[in-house]
Image 1 (tube, rainbow, N blue to C red):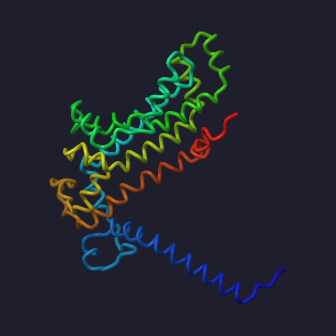
Image 2: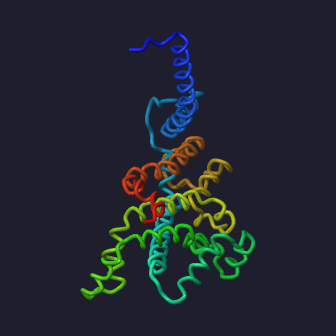
Image 3: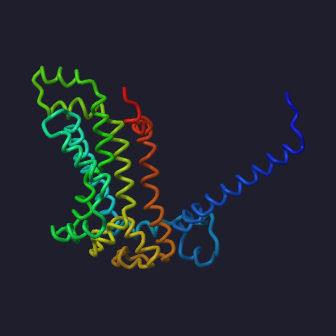
Length: 285
């Protein structure tokens, strides 16, 4: 066994200390947010810095979740993600087949991928079609991602054509083949692009500012901005609750966790599919 010099031991000790400091710099803020969100008003007013609450209370979470705006934004994200997957997968399946005008349609998709309209033309179209201050302003402009569509189409092309032909010979229609054969084989792709779409909509912020002035339709990041940046919690608490409102700071910390944790929870369940899905389109053979 090779003996290490004192210089190497010192270097290892400095590396370990540096990594510990970096880890603490990342973990302590999250621990502080977590602890403050579960702290009582008395403890928050009494202690300057809380890393572990003395008594666990959930008043801040009850106030946020009692308001339907926050819960509605979660369901809106799920609804838009499902629409994205439905339209992207069906159009990608169609583009994976050979038909008259396929190249022209593919060129139109690639053109929108390379040359976007920009903020002002898109806003004018949304306004002209009467989508302002509606939930469809968040859905229709980003209903299908050109990049996801192209990669999804390449994934469908990698599925053996013999499976489709065998099902068609047995009397199944194209929709039945797509629903019963293609989609079950596309779980890695669905999980990957579903996660991409969900994260995109969950973190959607600029589109909410641009198209929506109705607080009832705000995405979750707009609500988070209203609580943390503007420091306005009055629209998110239920004034009819008999308990005393918690401090605004605890509501802010609880809102940050509620806006962060769901994506962290979803990822482990999709990880086994995600590892396969990220390789979609990388190998052609």
